[in-house]
Every structure is written in C-alpha cells, then in structure tokens.
Amino acid sequence: MSEIIGRFHPLVVHFPIAVLLIACLLLWLSKKEKYQSLCLAVNITLLIGMISAVVSCISGYLLSGSGEYDAELVGNHQWLGISVAVVAVIIYAVNKNKRLAKMQLWLSFLLCFLIIITGHLGGTLTHGEGYLSLSLDTTAAKFTKKIIPDIQEAKAYADVIEPILHEKCYTCHSSAKQKGQLRLDAENWIIKGGKNGEVIIPGKPAESELYKRLLLDPLEKKHMPPKGKPQLSEQEVNLLHWWIANNNSFDKKVKELEQTGKIKTSLLSLQSSQLAKPTLPAVPINEIEKAPVNAVEALQQAGVIVFPVAANSNYLQANFVSIKKVDDKAIALLAPIKKQLVWLKLSAADLSIASFKVISNCTNLTRLNIANSNINDTGLATLTTLQELQYLNLAGTRVTAKGIATLSSLPHLINIYLAQTRIDKKDWGLLQKKFPNATLDSGGYQVASLAIDTVLVKAPPR
Image 1 (cartoon, rainbow, N blue to C red):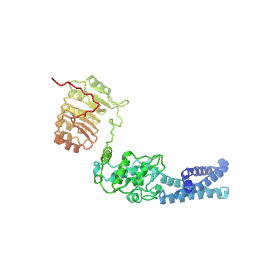
Image 2: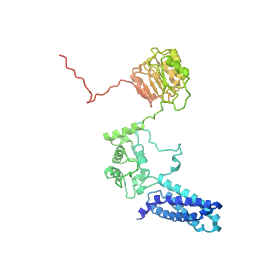
Image 3: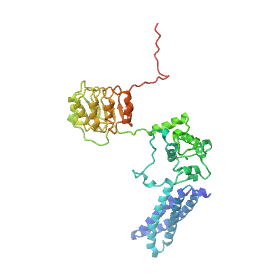
Image 4: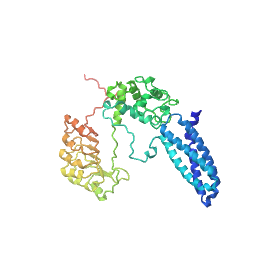
C-alpha cells in the first residue's frame, strides 16, 4: 500500500508548488493598500498549499523507499521538500499576526527559493543531471556512437553493446535512477544485478532476466523498456543475445567472439550505418546578390542554358550542352556571374588553360561536369581553388591518378566519376587513401539478371 501511495507523488507534488507560489504572490500584493482585500485569499491559499505540501512530503517519503533513485540526490530533495512544508506552516501560523508581517514577508521569499531548488532536484531525479540546460547548451557533450571503420577490430562491449544500453536503458538504470535497484552504466553494476539478483547469466541468454524481459509482449508489465519508451530493434536484441552467449565479455574485441552469419550481417550493417556521410547542401546557405542581368542575357544569347538552381534563389546553374563548339570566348562569359554560379556542365568541351582559369575563379561551384572534355592533369591542377566542390565528373578524359591526387585538399569533394580515364588499376588503392571520404566511380557496371527479367529466346541456327 505504501508503494502505491508513493507512486502518486509525481501527480500530487505539482499542486502545492502552484498554490504556494500563488499564495506568495497574493501575499506580496496584499501589502499594498489598494490590494488589502486579498488578505482573505492569502489565508485560504496558504492553508491549501500547506496541507498539500505535507501530503506531498508523505508520498515522496514513501516513494523514496523504492530504492529506484540516487540515494544522495533523494536525500537532498527530501529534506528540502520537508523544509518547504515547514516554512509554509510557519507562514500560515503568523499570517494573522500583524506584528510579524515583516517576518512573514521574508519567509515568503525563502519559501519561493526553497520551492525552486526542490523542484530542480525533483526534475534531476526524473530527467537526469543537467536536464534544464541540455537543450540550451549547444556545446554540451551528447552521447554519440563511435565511428567504427572496422567492426571486427571494435570492442564488443564498449563499441557495440554499451551504445545500445545508453540509448535504451540508462534513463531508468543509471546513476540518476535505478528502477528495481538495477544499474546498467558500468561493468560492476551489470554483474551485480538488481534487487532480485543477477540479470545476466554468462553464456545463457535464455536464462538471463535482462534478455528475457526484452522478449516479453510490449503490453506485459515486466517488458523492458516499458511501454512509451524507445524500444530495442530486432538487430539490437540479437546483438545483446550474441554478447551474453559469448559470456558477456567487457574487454574482448568483436573478432574474438564467435559469430554466426546472422550476427555478422548485423555487425556489418552497424558499421556501414555509422560510416554514413553527412549530407552537404548542394547550394551555399549564404545569401548572394543577384547576378548582372546583362551577363545572364549574354550567356543565353550565346546558347548557354542559364537559370536559378531553385525558386527565389540567386544562385545559378549553367549548361553548355546546346553549344556545338565551346571556346575561350564562351567560357569568358562566366566571369561576371562567378559568385552566383554553383552548377556547371561542360561535357565534351575543348578547353584551354585560359578557360580553366576562368572556371577556377567560380569558387562557389559545388557541381562540375567536364566529362569527355580535353582536360588533363595540367588543367586539373587549376581546380584546387574550388573549395566548395562536392561533385566532379571526369569520365572519358585524359586525367591520371597523379592529377586526381592534387585535388585531395578539397574538403567537400565526395563524388568523383573516373570511368574511362587514364588511371591504372594499380593506382586505385592510392586514390582511395587520398580520398577516404569520397566515392570514386570507375564505371564498368555489371547488372545481375533476375528471374523476372524478360529474355529474348532465338531459335538455334540450322
């Protein structure tokens, strides 16, 4: 019965907070002559606030006996809560004594202060340390999964299992809160278990309480995580089963533990998802002034297709596809719009070094397609100024691995198309090291046949 009453504490505790704060406000206003009529309201709100504060203290004390929260934090919250109730009783007792009016005023300030501190500690118990400033502090350290370049070299617990527990279990089983007297935020606590004993039996996941709770129907009371909390995915449940089956090692690497084909797939998908590259904006986020109208018209009259990359944007894309022969004179028309130009297509163009220098001045370019052009390593070296470049198509050109390597200083270059170039097979490994975060497309795709594909069957020749 005491545990049931204790569970009502989060429900009843907010009422005295609101009533006592209103009582303090009315008390301060009643000290002014034009608001003296509020004295009766002060007396009633103090009475209700005092009684509800005492009830909250009782329910809070009963809840603290469950052992689900940090003992030191609970102790501080408990004594401050009792202090709130005691001060509320004193203020109510001296309310009708005009000689103690000054004392009552100071006590009301003390009461407000105690309510704020007690409420903050209550919030810390419920939501964890630093909950109040977490959303405001953009520099605060947040838990993020480690990038795992090779999952087999990763630590089985620190890199695979701990992130799962942190994301799905720590809200109820960590230093701030211990439901069932269970903590899962450190090796010694996991081994110790909760109030009913061990939750993990090494090598026996089917007999481990931690694993069995995950398999219960979500509507079951003992299912973990409880209803309304983020649930573990099937892959995460499988990984926990695998870890426990391998004697829940805290120091071994993934490669040292036995792995079935299913687990290898789960581990590999974890690696690939963590190596996903962040998406960069294809258009600069900074605003830019509109390109000169006469410059855009000159390009259009020369046969160049020029238009904005998006509605209400001053950034432009230019395509020379409709020009039969692209020469230096046509490329020179890009100079007045070099700030606004972000996408440029010059397929099959015959360009000189002078033209490449004009292109190199278009420093906002994010996409450049010069496939099947006459560019070589010398022309490629002029493009090192394009620090915003993300996409570069060099398919069908005379560039070599040495020339491509000169572009490794471009920080955002993530897609490079190099089919039918002069890059030797032995140089691909070198380029992968030079561009570890980029996709190097060598072409030569082979599409596998499917059973549902239509096949043309011809009669054998006679």
